[in-house]
Image 1 (tube, rainbow, N blue to C red):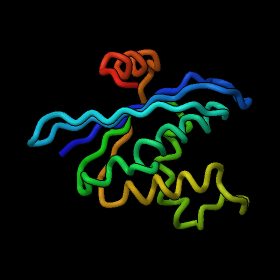
Image 2: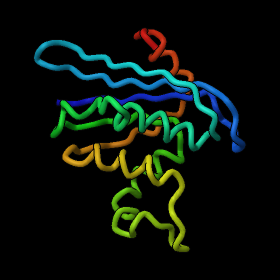
Image 3: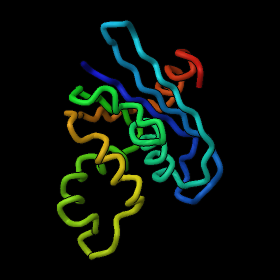
Image 4: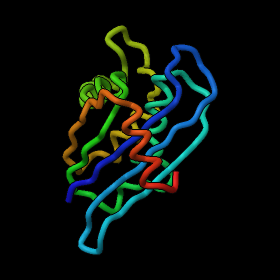
Length: 144
């Protein structure tokens, strides 16, 4: 089974500010289409907002991808920080979640939970260039 994960945030700042994020999981199952939306408010910078949005849909309290272990996950990201970071998960884990200078990586707790919940699934990342298209998809599908 293939699961698509989408997320969008209106925070584009390098400084912390209050904003919204939307995230959703979409899958075709033998019982039909599954659409799991999530919306939240956050006070964070653009990078942190992207990580939080991804975390909430794949590793948050409800663990939305958990029922689909062994699936192929396609993460649609408009955040170059998140895209790059997803490719570094294995290295970060192997390095004890430390940077090359020995300090903890940013958003360590969130990345650890994301990594834990992505294990057992193959995943790929699509670097989406149009954040508004993702926002429109999330709004069109509704319930966010």
